[in-house]
Length: 476
Image 1: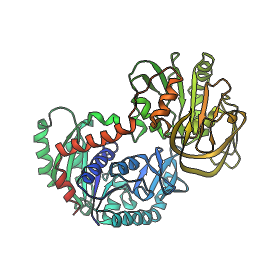
Image 2: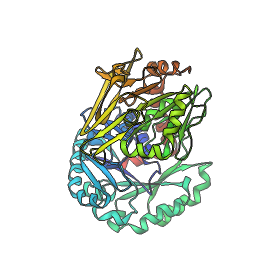
Image 3: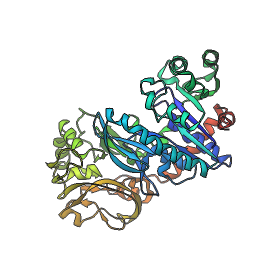
Image 4: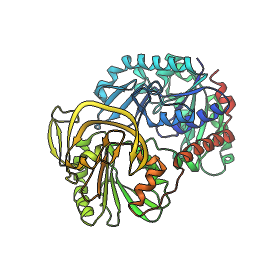
């Protein structure tokens, strides 16, 4: 087993991006590399070649390694459905729902799956680069931890601790982590790095030496802020970004359980349009040309949330003004006349009226469709994936949005309201250009090539500011 684990002093310190960059850097050294995250919590999921689902961050890291995503790369995925409960995915398949308190009891079972997946990856590759979750300093969660030191100790994987200087207090973050974890966990840490520095990194020389002196750990470097991070898919909804282009104004409703929101990344990269992520309490602006109702982990819950913001009224007014509407996955289901959930698969059993912008009805069912698809839409090649519960039918389905190869989605009689189950559709340059042309906007090709170029630039950035060779040597 040859592996190294990047843990963080907190959430959103840049672990996912650091692992992606290290994966690309190690792969360029001629190594067979795989990413691994024992436990992830995200509604941004990718469908894998083996028919399961993992966090989108691990799919990006697999891409950095030149690999197809596999369920072993993220054996435990938690998909929040409420503030206290989540769907639990084990090695790609849903095994049920759990409240936060009950989830702790599942962890011994889940650790077995985590270690099995890690063993398979380790046997198949020269190097596994592991990403932690949250922080090892959350010592109240340590007794049954499978995401940080619980995994590192069980699998014998050495750790490098990453701190985030952008949020301030990085000395306390790193020194404080050592102070609160037990001696056995601290012994797993081989060193630290400082991430997201703005300005001249030499200004932190004294602080860097202080961390080394206080902890006894070696430093692997200070990573300046990576300005091109926006070219890579965001992992967390808190990272959703708008774009400041001119032209067509595209508005996306930021639902409370928004899922698979990297569908929007190709639009955010377009200079010929302006993308606004509409936050709760904001009205849909009158100059919007296209409103997107995105995917969600809780269609019925977020339909109620949408109405609570008054967005149902705004959508109706937007449509009356001649605007266009696109619903993706759960957003597509919301656009119909009715959502019927006879078994309570999405919450409480019963029927709920939809927004009525499409003449379709959705019937929810416990079975989840997980598949990658290719086909055509608007006369152009399109590819993506489906990840949803429920089946949608009705008169507007006679005008399907795509053929992948079966008919997908629905288009209203006037052509201004579209629904589709297809995620990732905007990544295809030709389709994106055709879609935007219908709205009077031009498109710039090369989105996918831009992601790969950004991964190379990220690897170059880490090579310039970290002792990557020494960090990778920790794995040995």
